Length: 150
Image (cartoon, rainbow, N blue to C red; front, top):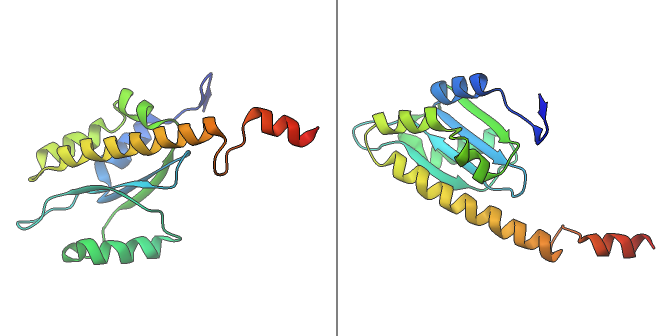
């Protein structure tokens, strides 16, 4: 569904994913890093929330999980989606409320890890905005685009 601000999300479907996924990875449109949330826990380890680099395939993510969370085996429910808005919008909409509530009910410091991950993601997004304004990397400034076509 489209709104005056572009693509919107189905909150009910998103909440269902947030309530059921063992492992969830969220991508963003401005930078390649992902938010990874592993809700599984046992007596030795609590949930994990971190920012990770992208991988080329689901199989690579399973290998990554095996290396970092091997004590849990393969997740029963693995989900991935791209958030079509800003990280700030994700926080302002409280879009991960269902996940935060799950983390609060689990042992460990999952909510603190989520807060830290949001800070990292906001930093990545702000840095990308600065690169776009300067016309760095893959971004083109408006005046460069005009002069290139002149």
